Amino acid sequence: MTARANILVTGGAGFIGSHACKALAAAGHNPVTLDNFSTGNRDSVKWGPCIEGDIRDTAVVQKLLCRHAITAVMHFAAKAYVGESVKMPAPYYANNVGGTISVLEACRRSDVQQFIFSSSCATYGIPARLPITEETEQRPVSPYGWTKLIGEQMIKDHSAAYGMRYVILRYFNAAGADPDGELAERHDPETHLIPLALMAAYGHTADLPVFGTDYPTADGTCIRDYVHVSDLATAHTDAVSYLLRGGANLAVNIGSGNGHSIKEIVKAIQRITGRAIPLRMLPRRAGDPPVMIADPELAKQALGFTTSLSDIRTIVAHASLQFTREVADAIPA
Ligand code: UDP
Image (cartoon, rainbow, N blue to C red):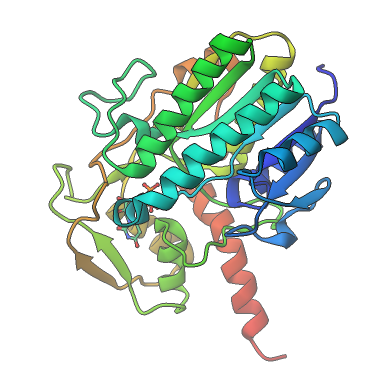
């Protein structure tokens, strides 16, 4: 049993941040959300106070750390689209690198000594070997991946200089949605594979674009390790417990250890929903590695973390909740 902690959650209105707030509250902690609502949803902030503000405003972050007697920071707030980052790198560096410096500086000034960072498997680039362990060389192939790798380095340097302890979580592909239907995956515009495939299945869009069919994989489409967002949220509460009991600095993969191609995901969704998904084959999307699969062993050993909802059936069933509800709502009484 660990103590209750007041935790600043930057980006707590976002997809992963809001699920993490729910998990933190369920574990007895007090999440405090800071979000600029550039992409997050106000109605996703349901567990603890919500402050509108920008992470790059160091004085605002510092004030919050003090006012809410924060003992740990979970830093989610970031721009997070690989493809967009290739086309538009500047806002990625400004927000992700500039924002992380600002939050770290506020922590230093306020003597907040525990930090949990949303990093990404995108820091590994195109891995030489699979599955990807934490020892795999980090050589990003997208500006997004670089901003996360730079974030990791800043945290390590900050820790060495000022003694702060950290857990860096390198997420694989967040997917699914809250099993209770209290939170959904809502991005505008939506860019992620599973919600887009469901949108095509439920007739919200004409078809699903498939980016690249000539990858060196069995069916030619990209393979990803999809991890249920509620499992990801649990990794964060595990990381808090780890830091609160004095755990040493850690950088760790958070994935399921299983890979699925785009075509496999499409087939699974068709089978589960009983609906057809028309496909539109397109060229590769810039910045996409062919195969990303986590070795989840260190997360298990160090944090005691294992996935329990990250099989594709459960991910798709939970991601479908919002669509089946929308479909049900659209049927006249
Ligand atoms: N993808 C696709 N069509 C889409 C969206 C994504 O083929 O409309 C592919 C994408 O190129 C990648 C995989 O699905 O190979 C997962 O992409 P997503 O954007 O969901 O997550 P990312 O890997 O970028 O974090």
